[in-house]
Length: 197
Image (tube, rainbow, N blue to C red; front, side, top):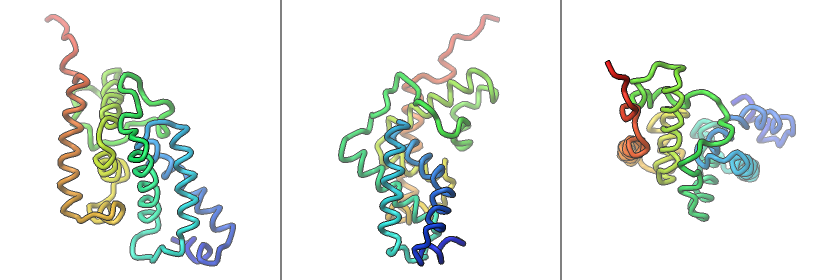
């Protein structure tokens, strides 16, 4: 990143530039993990504090963004584990204030392929996927968010979560299966009454 020399020199303009460039991305990661805007805001701030305090430990072996997402994900996972907020988001209400306002992953399109994009059904299907995501274990949620929301490679995910690439693949496989099960429990589009012919 072009900001790294300034960050290493503790240039305040570089830090301001870093925050401006990455705050939305890190907030989105936090929001996907906890599905609560206020808590996500707090966690994003906590992550930036840890990033600033721990920047000396960044060795440049991974991309700066990958390292920052790892710090952010660790903050989220620590919060979820310490307070047992696995089911923090109630499954009977959508999350408040989705930061991106668009389907967060085309990778889950197979879960709602029966509905044309932009239709009421497609919107309901997206909400169902997000609600199902909130019901997963934090570790499963993390690997799905990094893979399908952030588009990270297996290698980047392994770096971010400090696990082996093989573990990433198996965890991702289990997480996708768990997500599909959760979506089915919430009722798939095929469960809707069909019009009489």
